[in-house]
Image (cartoon, rainbow, N blue to C red; front, side, top):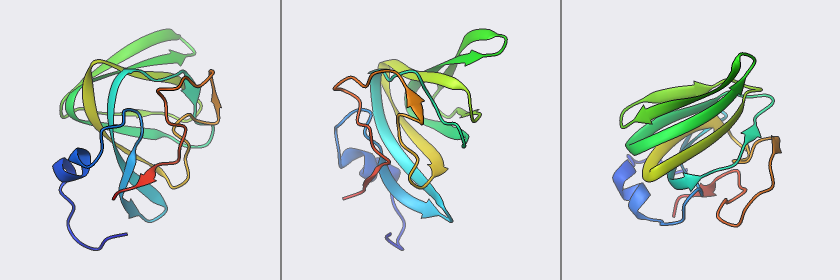
Length: 130
C-alpha cells in the first residue's frame, strides 16, 4: 500500500465500474474501500463481520431483513451505517452514490451467503487502486 495521502475524489475518478470497490488503504487487518454504486446490489449476509458504510456523495439505501421484519435505511451524503454480522441486507441506490466501506481484508462483496449474482455485480474482495 502507498504511504502517501490519498484524495478520495482522485481514487473515485480512477474507475467507472459500478459495484466494484477499490482498496484505498488498509488499517491493521481491514480494507478501506471506495465504490461507485447505482441500481441494486443483491441480498447477502456476512456471517462473521459487520459492514461499515459511509456515503461520500449521493444517497444509498440498504434494505435489511431483521428478526422484527424487513426495513430500509436511507443514507444521504455524509451518513454512516453499520450492518451487523449475520444480517441479510441489500444495498441499492436509485440515483447513484459514492461510498466508503470498512471491512476485514478478504471480505467478499457478495458476503458468505447470497442470491444469484447478476452480471452488473463484481464478486470480489476489492481491487487494488491503480
